[in-house]
Length: 197
Length: 235
Image 1: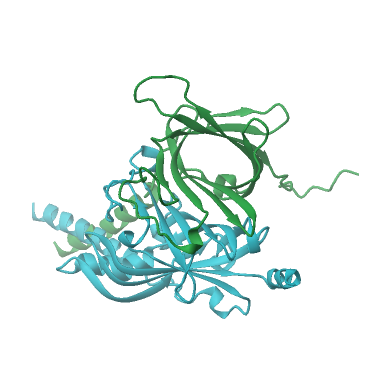
Image 2: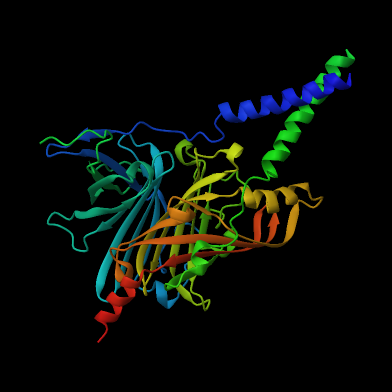
């Protein structure tokens, strides 16, 4: 019976190791990326943030309605003139797929506007926006850095506010549209063949 | 019948032995010493509180160990963001003075491999300080040493809590020597690619509510060129 017990111990260790090897410990839920091919190269993906329903936090003090309720934004000098917001971010099918940060600040008379988009199953992208908006009210920014899926991508992003033209009761005021254009960095060839003469 | 019982007890014992070996894996190395601790370059030091109620906001799916703060903050319950938490906090400098704002978003990572001693979170920081500008920090964090030395002892404790002093680096990559990749976008760090390390100092932890007393620290190494550029701009 002792032998049977020790055989069981070995089988238990092997079964646990096998299960841990074969089954994923973490499996993030994924939504299919909805991209289109841009006419001048690259892929385009559009995200949206419904306002006010997707707003997790809005930074400056003195808001008529603090978001979230009960927020105590520190009234300190280093945060003066800063507007920091956090949102849930949706794909073109209006499904929440990530979290976004937008920060606007003035530093030594220079305006700084940054976006960070974080998609748990894909990675993150950091976009530094132009301080001045374009004619038409939209603003353009360039990818500054990215992680995982976005690590090897260059590109640009356009932000614009789209007001809701429907007058339905309970409808959102509008949405922020973020249109990202991805362009891959040239990768070195994987083969070791001689270059063409 | 007794052989079946012995086999079943053996299977359970084997699984328990394996779980203990994962937690107390003698081959996994704890990185207590930061690679930046021997750096001769100037370091940006940013401290923050890791206790949710000390932050501006902290949110997760509402069912995790740590409670969202404030209570009515929007929770991250949708499937693609359920395994993610986010916090906004005041970053303090080395003299414990407010330096700016930091936002951290961390997700459970599919690269977690407990067989290799890796309980991984993929996390990013967005930090803005008027002195340095805006920075994006991307890193993978390994929480297995924390689980082994703090969370597991707390779970075994009769009061479901742990008190003591635990300090360790949680950054495990993606850069060289297991450092985080830092990208500057404005101010003093504009255009710079830097290395960083995040560490935790935990003094009290509860299985029911998470961190009770804990401080985090970001160390970011400035290259010599950044200082020269800045000095060159000074009148």
